Image (tube, rainbow, N blue to C red; front, top):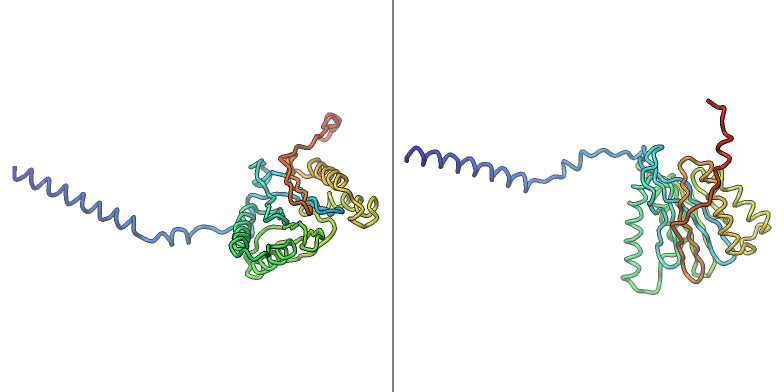
Length: 265
């Protein structure tokens, strides 16, 4: 019996030591674990391609597809790269998705603060564009850039449409039509033709239907020519009445010519 008692005491001591070690593990600081994570600041992992926008007589039309690519792999096909900031402003992004989510979270905080203040002021498209420019330039100066290019579109307090562009270096401008990524080469000529030839250089000569048709044509061209583009996209129409985000929309494409592309083995 005495031997059995001694054995029980030994078991209890071992259990007690294990519990002490568990308590130490549960209460210790895990900061050093997260401090060892790798930062791929200069190497975007999951990315989105072009976003495009154009002004028309009553507002702005923006478009962005829903594809996120992991290198050349079509990884996620339902990711929204278009974010409604408030009732007059929309932001879109091409580039690294994680960086977009990071900045989007801070924009939500700005909007939430505006709502809490209830002072009659809200974040305008121009103000948001300036704020994003400062953030991107600050991160670029610290050699930790946010690997994104942003379009901010909306209606100013005076009723004027606004489209602003800002890239990862903090370079920014506003224009009547803008395209990012591969769209700067493939979609810009289509947008320019609509504005400078059909509308004679004045967005006030562009009807909403013409702006939507032009944007749709540009998205179709990107889908045909850009291997990171996708046939499912969102389209935002911003005017004095508010914001309408349509989608997911699907491009109607004809690939019948593909059978004639041969002999290049």
